[in-house]
Image (tube, rainbow, N blue to C red; front, side, top):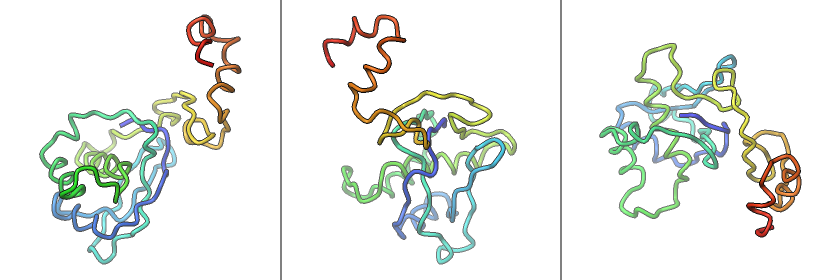
Length: 169
């Protein structure tokens, strides 16, 4: 997974720990980020009682994922339990539904080879400038809030943008 923002939202549902335990036979207490490579990794709980109910999650506004990971039977089982009987439920945010399988998959991979990377991190080193909630890439850098403001700022430097998109702004 290549992600733009972490932490970006917090999980508050105590039932998710039991759902992780059922599917993975372990429960994440917290998600941590390395200081050097900016990759994410899990801190597992000793018991469900010790699970932290304020688990940070990956921002849902932009990430690139391998869907083959989410199609694996173990992750499908977790996601079915996570969602429950009603498939359009918004009780739990979809951001945590993306975060937990990716973190669990990271834990099963060969140590030292990161599978979850921050876009602006030292390994990926991408600055995509995706504007969301007035910030670029979920960071402190402010972005134009109005789409036409961003268009007007970029149209002089992006060859052909005004000809292709000018009628929409």
